Image 1 (cartoon, rainbow, N blue to C red):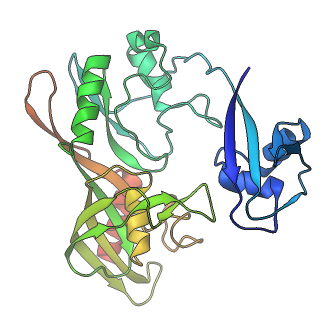
Image 2: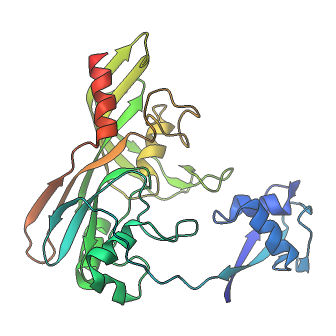
Image 3: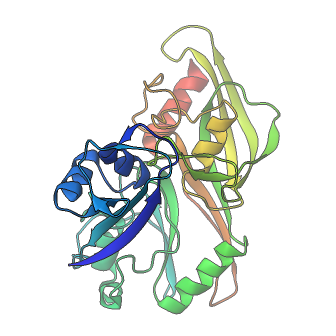
Length: 310
């Protein structure tokens, strides 16, 4: 098994070594960090250290992380809702709860496993993300593009980089958002206090989201008491968790988002109300302008009707 060397510098003192590693390296839990320390895979200032070692500003930490060989992609007969398909590409309406590609903690049962069952030729590429052009969070539903060959994938990815693909999401927000149209420009990066999360941080990567309000709801009492805003949001950049972090940063987190919003659910929905409902792009082979749409899934549509009828 090969290893990846990671060097870290301590900026804040009086923190345990194992906690520091878990905070700084998103894929590490504290228990795994302790195992690496016990195995001699971690040095502090050039010497082995204990998990309980209290770090000081300026300390240099070096970690040797094992690199596991990726598992073979196994085709799985997971149902797919195909919105569009031709011999070059297809568009999937991904359900909430489905992870896009295999990763630590999700070695199987992903969209990619379903794709290699639907398109066996994808499995021969040797790539762990065959055909994947972009991604959606596990609990975000909606449209995702898949290329059937590498040339088409590169062409589509270039369109994303050049901001020629228009992605629109439906998001239900906490509170009454004003103004009715707007633009959020706030740089994003890893949250320095919670490395598994993203945050608005000085010096982060450029991130821009435009939005316009579709409906607003005010319910003083009852099971859906509160103020809510249904918006259509278009991310002009494609940063991790961008829409979720941007709306939370202006005081209007997405309903049901337990990471960036309220820690307890205030409405009867089991995930964040975020759905990629529209994609517009130029077909890389035919040059045709395509506009694809995916309706709100049942769980989100029912919540919306509840708000409208309450």
